[in-house]
Figure 1 (cartoon, rainbow, N blue to C red):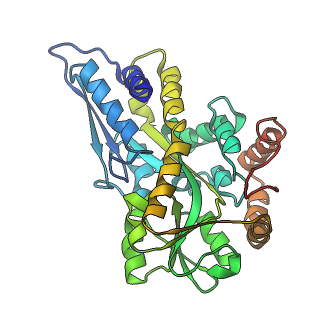
Figure 2 (cartoon, rainbow, N blue to C red; figure 1 turned 180 degrees about the vertical axis):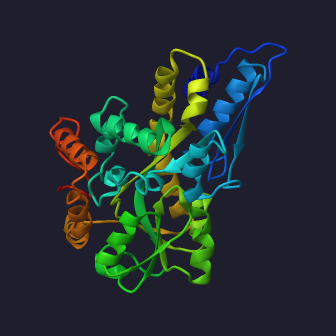
Length: 346
């Protein structure tokens, strides 16, 4: 119920424009890659639609195009930026092409525990403010909230990837240039694919394994074409709920920002619970779930170190500002001790 209430507040705040019986209906369309039933990315948008249309008596209409009906992963940012569609949900990697510095979240093992990711995604964090502004300036879209999709893991069949040499000569589905670099450095062959094509690519041999979030085990039916999940958790999977800036500016309400924050908190609080359920689902389907030992983490870090070195060599202002902000955050009590459990050394 809390999530419903917050999403209702968000849309009321976002979309509350003068509406009378004779006013023209305001229509907002949202593009989404996964089904609206997806517990991480879909359900919040459904609640948002229902609440807004109810409270405005459909003076404001919200239409969700899910399953990539209108735009696939790498088309969403351009579509929202150009105004071809008003809103969308896009992954971090889709912004790295326009603003390379924002790819800090994908740097191997830099954000490999939940407390650090949560602190970074906090709207008041320096890292978050820098990234949101860079996205707005470069792409002309406003970030309404960040939505976690968990951590990056490997799905494979007949082998695990606890050690990096296990991906040698393997075709690996990747979703960003950063993950492609990691794959190359560790001996694999990267294959860039939309998430909607992962199942088919595994089935026909286009790829041998995929990088993705555990949530896709059910939504993309990866349990049918793989049998092993290796929890490398080497990168944070964050998505942006974005709106075209001109559309945003045309909407009237003085508390738009505040309401968006309330909605974001409601969704993020459920991430751990949803991931736990996804892993339970995978086990029920007979999949093996493997975690890395500290030594194996160290091997992966060493193998992929060139990715972070290349990022740090970028002399742009944004990269310098982001790395400095990251350094400060790692001295904060929330994030200074590093991950626990299988990952117990930085």
